[in-house]
Length: 312
Image 1 (cartoon, helix red, strand yellow):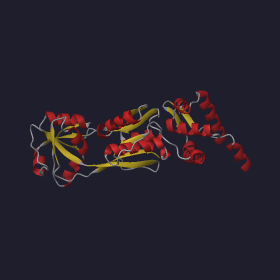
Image 2 (cartoon, one colour):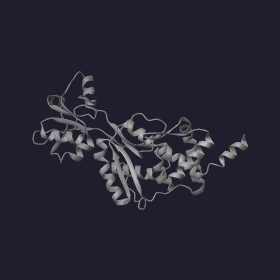
Image 3 (tube, helix red, strand yellow):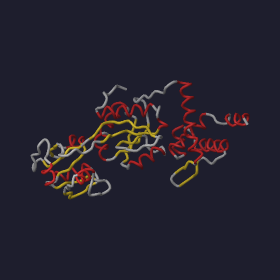
């Protein structure tokens, strides 16, 4: 039996294992071929050898791409560990040179992160990594995690309250809320009274179209209710609506501080303690030692003001 396993191992060179990991990440043979500088025929031959060695189909062709079997998913962790151990033994930690790096960084981010983090990241890439391109996708949390698992995204930004062991999370900053109102209609005090807050109309940001949010749940727990006159899916349209009406909106602090002046709004502390939340970067554990991911997360921390920006 031992001789048989050694014979099988002899058929698994590093390229074959990299093809396996690439198919797990991207689910598309064409992307794996581009990434590894192989021909499509080369990827097909590697997959054939993998199937013969492991006695399983490993990847099934589906309309959306190559779907891994249960056996392929079970092999992911040990194969990744083997590749990482070999990398450490041969060359030590990999380096990431942003000045010469080429490719596309793919990030999931909803409205708040798109307007508070992504503009700064584009600036950093232009200055430090001019040959890297950025694609940001506005998709929900679970869809983002599924896309990261499938190798379609590198990182997701936002508020994640439940993550499995397959993911790594780095908190970027803690966020809370401010109230915004039309500058020409309001002279808001530094902190509004609850009575004033409840007498006003309110615009709610709700991607799902609900007419209640965390503020309404908090008010209900106190036997109170505010008047929500509209729900909009995005923050910047909500700020524009506040500018055009005498309604208020309760929005994340960074959005209020960054865009109140542009929309001619004034800000105030909310009259009740709305819970804060952590905005984080999330990526797959298979990229735990990927130097590009570490570089990217450090830049996001610097953009957030959490750490000083280092050169390189």
